[in-house]
Structures are given as C-alpha cells and as structure tokens.
Amino acid sequence: MVSNAQDTVSLKTVEITAQKNNLWRVGKKVESIDSTIKEQFKFNSVGDALSFNSPVFIKNYGAGAVASTAFRGGNASQTALLWNGFNLQNSMLGQADLSLLPAVLFENIDIEYGGSAALWGSGAVGGSIHLNNKTKFNQGIFTSSNLGAGSFGYSNASTNVLLSKQRFISSTKLYGLHNQNNFKYEDNETIKRRKNANYTFYGLMQEFKFLINDKQLLSVNAWINSNHRRLPASNPNLESKMFQKDEALRLTADWSYVKTTFKSNIRAAAFYDRINYTDSIAKIFSKNLVRTIIAENENYFQWHKNNQLNFGVNVTSSRAVTENYESPKTLSRASFLAGNKFVWKEKFTAYAALRAEYFSVGKLPITGNVSLEYKLFKTLSVMLNAAKVYRQPTLNELYWQPNGNKNLKPEQGYTGEANVEYKNQIKHFSVLVSGAAFTRSINDWILWLPGAGGNPTPVNVQQVWSRGAETTWKLNYKKNNFNFGISVITSYVLSTTQKSYLENSSAIGKQLIYTPRYTANGNFSAGYKHFNLVFFHQYIGYRFTASDNSWWLNPYQVSSLRTNYSFNFKRIKLITYLACNNLFNSNYRVIAGYPMPLRNFEFGITIQTLTQRHEGTEAQKNLTNKK
Image (tube, rainbow, N blue to C red):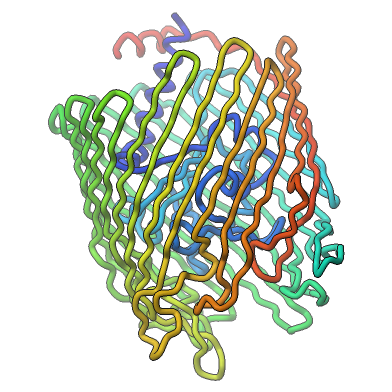
C-alpha cells in the first residue's frame, strides 16, 4: 500500500537523524509532555508546560519575566537546553530563559534526568530539556492558526504552515504575543495591581528537509525571535525604568548519511544572541552580543549484531562583545566522544561513553557515563546511570568587569541514579508507575560573593551534595469516545552545602536557596468525543531565601482548569479553548519580591486545515521494497 511506503520513509529519516537521542534514553529516566497536555499549553511557554507536568522546579519571576530551572537541586546553568540536539545556553549567562520559548513551536518536549556531560558537554549536570521539531514526509498541506486572549491585556497569535511532500518538507511557524501584565495581586491583605511589567514577544521558525535519496537527508532550520519587556522592581511599590530587549538568530544545518551498518551526521549551527538592558534611574545602558559557532560530526558503526560503536568530534566557539568586558572575549572548546551500545535479546541494553575536551581557558576534565537497562519482565524495567559531569565557567564569570575571575575552575563531580518503571496495558487501561533515586556531588561550585570595592566576584567556593527521590503515577482509560486520566508526580530533593572555602560559613549543612525540598504535581483529565477537560494542581514547598536558611518563602498550592472543544468538518477542524489559572485565587510568590497573579482567564480558538496526502511515487515504492 502507498501509506506503508510513506510510513517507511518517515521512519527511515527518524532513524537517520535521531541516533544520539536513542543513546541518551538508555538507562535514563525520560519523561515526555504528551500531546493531550501539550494541546492545553499551546498558548503558553515551555516553562509553563514543565512547571505543571514535571518535578522540575521552575524559578519564575512572573508572567513574561525570566523563568529558569532548579533541576534536582542544581541551578539553571547546570541544565542543558537542547533544540534539535544543539545547546541553547547563552555563553555569557550560562543559561536559557524558558519564558521566551513558546510551547507551540515544538512537536516534542522531553525531559532527560541525570547527568549527560559525556553526550552533551558542559552544563548537562542535573538533567537536560529536549525541544525537537519532528515533521514527517508525505503528509500533504497542513495549516494551523491560533488566536488567544486573556486577562490583563493578554493577546496571542501563531500560525503553522506545513508543506510535506515525498522528498521535501517546508514548515513555517510565526508567533507573537503581547501582555500589559497589570495583574491583580495581594500584598498585606490589600489588593494591588502590578505595574511596569508589560512585554511583547514575536518570532519566526522555518524548517526545510530534503530527502536527497534513500541514503541521504539534509535539514536546514532558522529561528528568529525578538522580545521586548519592561522589568518591574523587586519592591513592587517602587517605580521602575528598567527595560530589556532580547533578540536571537539561530541557524542550523544537518546532513545525514546512512548505510546498512554505518551512519554519519555532519551538523553546524550559528547562534547570535543580543541582550540590551537599560535602567535610566540607575543610569545603566548595557549592550551585549554573543555569537556561537558549532560544528560537529557523529558516526555510528554496527560492528557486531549486538554492538554499535559511536564516535564524533565537536568544535564550539563563542565570542562576546560588550562594554562590560575590557575587550571582546572568545571561549573555544574542542571535544572528542567515543562510546559503545550493547544490546542483548532486547532485554538488556548497556551504553558507555567517554568525552575528552580542550578548553581555551583552563583545563576541562575527561567525562564519561555508564548506563544500564534491563527488562525483568515485559512490563517491568530497571535502569541505572552513573556519570562524571562538569560545567565550564561562563564568559561573564571569567571576564565581567571589574571583578571577573580568570582563574575559575570548572564545576565538576559525579552523579548516579536508579529508576524502576512499571508500564502495562490492561484492556482499556494503561498504567505507568516509576520511582527514581538519585545522588550528585559537585566540587568547585561557583558563587558570586562580595569582592573588591563591594562588587560581586565569582569564586569556586562550595561542595554541594544533592540527593533525593521522584515518583510518577499515571493511569489512563480509553474506550470508544470516552477517556480519562490521572497523573501524580512527586519529588523530594535535599541539596546541601557540604564544604565551603569560606571561614565559619553558616551555609554548611543547609539547603540551597530557592530549592524546594518537596514538590508535587497532579492532573485529572476527562474527555468525550470532541470535548476535553484537564485540572492541574501544584504544590511547592518551602524555599529558603538566605544561605543559612534563616529566611524563607511559605509553601504554596496553585491550580489551573483548562478545557477545549473541537468541531470537525470535512477538511477543517475548529478548536475552542478556555482556561482559568490560579483557580482558587492563591496569594503566593515563587521568588521573593515578585508577586504572582490572582485568578485569571485565557481563551482562544484554533483553525486547522489538512489536504489529503500525496500519492506515492514508483521511486518510493521501490525504496520500500528494498527495505
């Protein structure tokens, strides 16, 4: 059949381009934002989707403001954020802002738990977030347009136009949103309005794929975004004249070649990130530009029926231009990776890898990891992972004037985790239960401390031990036109300072600031025919705001109710959407000094069109027969 030929081509391209993805899943706890949940967050950011659907704590300064991760007791610079395998961490800051990433741009959002510095390099310490574009060949012409609005002057628009032929794909995504962000909040039993917090984001993502022949695939991607926001003061009663403009241009290219026992990828990327910050009250006018060039080659050789060897090289160079350095500065690193994957009877899988790097400033350690996965039964798996991890100092940590520290050493240490997962399909029920325990010890942890002239300076000052456990409970039922699901995700994280180079440090044995010990997320979903309803609930425990744990923020609970209804016509699908955020009007702060909105609403509409798939060609049918 023609459809079989088309599916084979789609599977073939995934096999070519996702080899490293297959490797990082071995022996790891991996969670994905499923399509039902992703549909409920298509008008929101990646940070919002992760906050309600994973144990990853998102440090959120408010709507449109910075959102970063505290992954298993780490910080934002210890989380790798990967777009189609390329790390988006800003080389000056060492982190990425999740509030600037619309969830609607990505077909897949996956969370990888545990250290993976051997595969992804610097920063993959606590875990990694994977944002992938997965378009398939021969899907016809598909369009999707979203229009949304909500409380406090919120408006949102996006569109996706997909042209998918037998050997060519063009995917164009446009998005824009604006928010006056003058929300209501409670302060000392008085209802106030937020001020000086409006923002506007817009951008374009373009993807091209060319299936050159049955052995070669070429992908080219471009992503442009511009974000303008006004920044409120940490004291909401004070006037603010702070503005920030973020602009980014991201270009990538990927050529893949596959034969029976050998596969190779040549990939390149160029990222340009500009951050301009002004504060007319403090008379600060800062312009910052960082350019990152990445080139890498990955190779996979099936040298035995049970063994696959992979090896590759990566060269990354970042150059920053800012008046906050004495002159433009460049950081470069070159790395070599080698690993082997062993599979036995589809029951046991093992992967081991080593990564050696050269860094233009100082030395980086040789890193590695060993991952094991064993299926005790068809429904029960045990996974183990151990890794040596590191994070190189950022450009700001090394060169910021007046107190950057060129003598900083990389943060480095060891991680380990064990995960047990039960997954089963019982008639109309699907069940997933998993439990993970982890430990991580990091030496030479970098902190910014008061330095000469009262200016902060970064110092390798601490040894931090993070340990804890996570559980996932999911039950889903689907029969005919009815479905429901229940999900509960819990996390316990103890992340404490074990040693400090500071005399008489009051932080020894204390929990890191803004690292909640307990978190829990739950949701209940129900659907009938074209109607879906999802209730989300989140609990976040105490967050200490002082390193000696003498000050803290109280725990909070917040809920969201989201629903959509679809109308299906011949080739048009209309989806209406309604959400009530902070359903029970909780008064809470994620970060001290930054209030969060009381009850608020969103609504929207999506219009989708789809033409029939193209007919298969004789060449495609011949390609299928070869396989």
